[in-house]
Image 1 (spheres, rainbow, N blue to C red):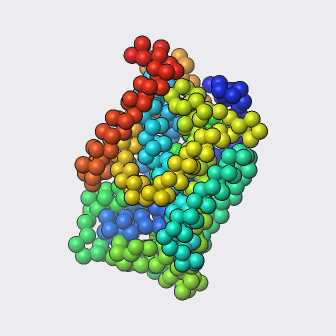
Image 2 (image 1 turned 135 degrees about the horizontal axis):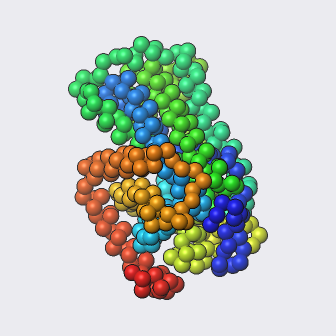
Image 3 (image 1 turned 90 degrees about the vertical axis):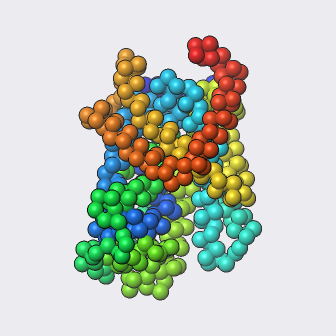
Length: 457
């Protein structure tokens, strides 16, 4: 599809998904997905890994910088193929339909739906801070939040976009309140304090700290999944991808600086709620820190949940249009102009995971398979430029594309290896399960809908 084409034809129902999303919404999706519940605990993990206040700050700064090559790569390929589907589309265009299918298969059954369930449960648990609800009541609360955002994003793209813009703006505000107040209370001489006793030092500590920040930056590429509904994607996708990584890097670095000025690194690494404890050291918040952070967490995670429900069903929509998923997922609602069925089913599966959190936790081991998929994706610019050179015409081209692509691959490989070292058995088992279940499903859909591709293979 060219940039000038503004609609995606739906082969199943004859209706269309139109380009209605502005630059602000693309940024809101990327920022809203990235800033989630992880940042509330990741500072303590980074403190334990990096060992000293200065290295904690540097870890977040460098952790954000190394994401720039990846975002530049996403910016380029999203303007070459500005369609809904994200990775599914990019692997398909690189000539690997099986890998394209597997990326969507893993997303649906292991990461997307469980992500929705975990986000909803996180919100419900913070709501319980005020209501003191437990057990079944917490799960019902999570269900209600999923249903609310399912309906919102199902009945209106514009309404969902406006809400996403609003909630993203609101969710970053509490972080800047903490940062601003900390500037008057923090003892920044603590930044030069020595590492805690027994802490790693030097380059080993810095690398460990950078690795610990990675999950805080995950999600910035989310908007590529909904690129087929973005206005002027040739302009807006690169601006969104690149501005997002700079914004989040600055935010996290300032937050890390504030935390290390309010607490010692030893206190940070031992804290299960570092943001709340840091806030409690600020007189303006003080004894109300628990309430302040609980409200803050509810707002932050609501933004992430809304974002997930908005963009994730678009991948199955794209797969269905390609004949690699159940056809019903590729339909567009004639009145609402959204992939309503895809949204409902994905949220429905998430509701099942709400009542089976143990299963959701086990599926977290598919992280390794997802990272492997990400690493393989970063090789695709080499394929596009050799195999698709006559049709590969991105409106944005990343600078020094070979070097930038290699950097993206290397940084992703580091995370891949560290994840494998952390959980080698579960990582391999989950990857084998993904392939063992996904490949038969792939051949089923191809044989049923696209037998010509199997003959080519």
